[in-house]
Length: 297
Image (cartoon, rainbow, N blue to C red; front, side, top):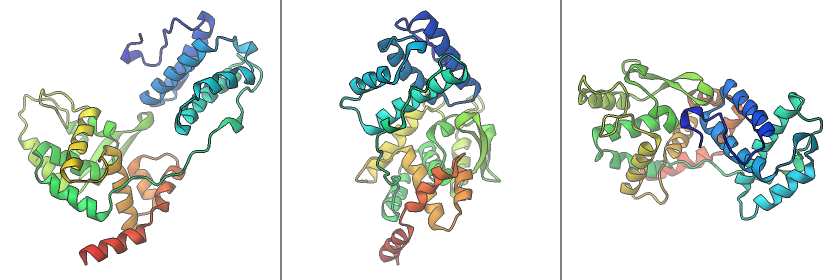
């Protein structure tokens, strides 16, 4: 079993020794490219299964070998899962081609499944107001946490990794480390700054430097953050579960509705590709604003 600190190393005993050396060289290349830990871990897991079940030497690997394995694997799998598997295989075989471990292109674009383009899940003004009311009943830590998620648009991993020294309450900014270990500055609301200050005043000098901590004084993990948002969503009586990513989408939607440019939103969210942010442009903001006006006047 691979230790968590060596997530870019595979010790899978079902993979042939020569192939395992190439596979680990590939994983190391992802690490050196600053690919996210979650991405490397997913790719490693998928490719370990493929390389152990399709034990064909690289110089003999054909499209038929891959398609046969993929067909068997894809039974009862969702299109997005299949697409992730294909991305993993394509990445690995591209590496093998570039490093001259194989001569022929074995992946086919036509294998890609059709992925439905669903709108990002976000809270409309009515549900957002209900959550805001529910926040008032939370502990000071959880209030600060949820307000930070809603007003910064950060990923839950970025919030979990924050230290107190990363935050400037006066400027209302925080330095976060996003995907690919890229640093960026995010902003948060004045209300969030006020509640964060109140939360930090409850902390003792002996406690850790982590911004959000659990009851044991350790860093509040991503699962802990997820549980907080789920709980507040339930207390607010939302029709579907509230999660940190919903907070992130709600932040982007509200910024778009207020006239923020896609470039600004992309910078705040840490999107390296503006096309990722363009998904928010499909949100019917005018309808949302009209609904808000009808309810609130």
